[in-house]
Length: 380
Ligand code: NM2
Ligand code: OGA
Ligand code: ZN
Image (cartoon, rainbow, N blue to C red; front, side, top):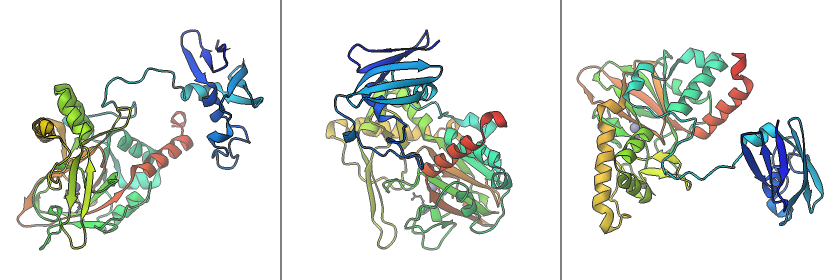
């Protein structure tokens, strides 16, 4: 039996299910009212601003009937109904996290052993089946990458992938770009060189949060792709040496690209990015585009370089990587804030040709959430 008590001064109330007490402040409850004067019935957007809620808002009374909580607020003398389950889902009565570098429950970090269960789907399935699409997007949210196989070996087929969940992020490289050996390459990606595992475009702010790479030809020897979980790399670095994790998250690195006429992209961001509450939100790592590091104080620079070196060693450790070879019609998508991608060098007879483009994770999460709401787990 759930029980509700209001604190003496009316500043908060407590829901008690017999084992857990969950407190909610008066101002928080009032701000999260869902009555027709507070929220638009058409689109759910909030109609009021905080200035419309009196400063000294308090709880006059609260009554619980089944899963409905009715709260009367003063000085407005306004009564609002709440779904208790909604309140518990949005509860915040917990201790602040002590340790930087945490990830939420929706994230599963991985190493090379993920090779046994590479997140994957078939091109035709995600195009035609919303459940298959939901599962594929869900794997990207959880693991930060997934492959998609057996698509058409047709130019611009990668756009049909982006169309499933979002929008292309156009850049100086175009709406899409051709990844193949060129005579005067404006980027080392457009050569047969191997590329160390990296995140793309760290010199951009914000970075594109998705990259899609789609294979059209792969008859040349070599050119396999590898992916590495940058979040697992950060966790490993932190476990080995907390100071190293700290310098890479506290100080900004710098990145730069000016390989084409009229382009001079520059950014100042840490290699390990944390939210203000310590959540691990991103990794930027790209040897080709790292600029002079000039934001680390002299006294910390040696430690910074030791940390940077070790981060690179962890990234290069074969036990951290998942390797696959794209055949024409195969593709993969990475969360470019998290998962690093690499390729082996290729040469000799035959050709290798990929098309790539950027997009963003916000619309992918949105599509995933909408599909989850439309195709509930239980109905599968
Ligand atoms: N390309 C493939 O971030 C990078 O510079 C990697 C990006 C040229 C769009 C290559
Ligand atoms: C890139 C890149 C990898 C590949 O274009 O950003 O990393 O497989 N390419 O060619
Ligand atoms: Zn790349």
